[in-house]
Length: 342
Image 1 (spheres, rainbow, N blue to C red):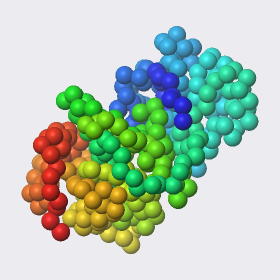
Image 2 (cartoon, helix red, strand yellow):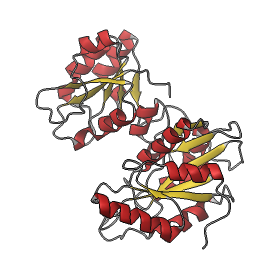
Image 3 (tube, rainbow, N blue to C red):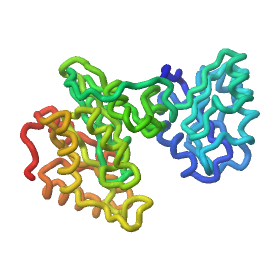
Image 4 (tube, rainbow, N blue to C red):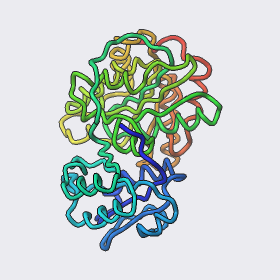
């Protein structure tokens, strides 16, 4: 995939609520430096707190790409948006979208983009082919986020680690594996759209050989314990050849997301199963910390949960949003030697 040009104008369309704009919210949170404004249509009920801009004002401000940061039912390109998208192409913007429905499959958009010489980025859909995974050891270091469930904060945790490591002068790069992460990073591979046989190869491609002290911080997807998405998670584990894992968890879940009959696994079991899978391609893989999304807990209860989790597993336990990830980076810098007790 070509690199998506910044700065961005975030298109919220006619989003019915804030949740419908979660992709845009994630990009604006992590890349406020490149999100110059938002474009909202009549009836939009989402707000990123960015300046409202017209397409003309965004062009004057230097925006390069209009990002569709809203999802509707079915993930389709809405007919109501087409006039705005066409005008953006005519004004010289590229378009980027993480929806299931591809911009390139909308004839009006595809034809106009070709005529205007503009690029369309359907970030959920890889544009290149991948080899099957080889499992061959490659230079450089890698960290992968894994989870007790899906949607527990793996992207936020890995982005926070990249930020903290770079702030300390470490060589580190976030490697995006989902559509929101790609829009934040500007490139990556949405692994849930890769044919199963090639997922591990895609991750090898995404995190190639590098300098010995360079860290690729790989965004995780799904959970080994989730009946719907474990296949993607396993492909990531094998392709990453991770030296380090961080386990991500959300403590208020009554069950696995979308699966009422499946309880959320214990943290210890999840760490062990992920290490067993990771050690197929890196026998020295270790877990270096636990990232907890405590947004559903009051401050005092969240602090108590983190303290108890850290003590129970002899690992730093942090909320990346509430208190950062410094203790995990401390452990990485001090050397994650040895393995967890079975």
